[in-house]
Amino acid sequence: MRILVVEDEKGVAKFIKQGLSEAGYAVDTAGDGEEGSDYIAVMEYDIILLDIMLPRIGGIELLQSIRKKNIKVPVILLTARDGLTDRVAGLDAGADDYLVKPFAFPELLARIRALLRRPPIQNSTVLKVHDLEMDVSRHEVKRGGVLIDLSPREFALLEFLMRNNKQTLTRTQLIEHVWNYDFYTGTNVLDVYIGYLRKKINTGNLKPLIRTVRGIGYKIDDA
Image (cartoon, rainbow, N blue to C red; front, side):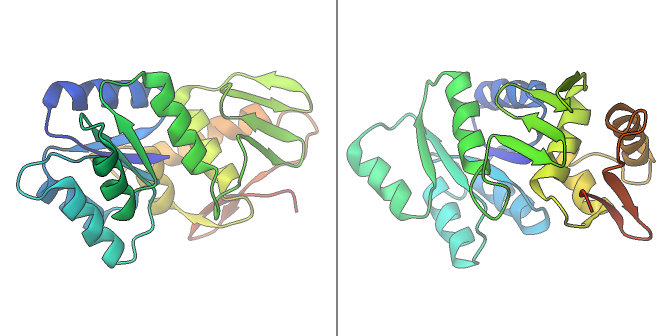
């Protein structure tokens, strides 16, 4: 899952990025509203964390702009303003959630998971494909009831595949949602990680679930 953090306080942005990265998310950061707008124009995100008080383009103005363009990415507003008027203004502008700083990081992660459960992606914290099961909140993966040990990057890649069960995902989609903006797409890292996942979830005589769609990318299904 790929997240954009638009936050002008460098310390806060660094803290959020580190925590989200450790949780297995791919994270880009923008230091003002204009830079955030540039990122949104060229990249597809699963969640945007947006501060209200931003230089150049304010958070509410940026939010209104992306909604006018029919960009439906979930947005969580992060702000020190906790008044009712500010919360209402943010939600009316198109925000999906609102979190007042300072906040507990586990709460931020829970709110992100809640938004990711909304359609069109699979609507649950427990994702299932055939006998493969992922509990996102517990960060556990099992197949046939047997626990599978995955690295954070392997977990993030498998989660994106499972949330888009039966859909063919291009190599670009997978790279953009699992790796950061500065990831070099000319490498074969994606194929290496797909190989890691296959070895771990397709052991023995178990039915292969991750499929290569030649010339396009990969998908996961139980067909």
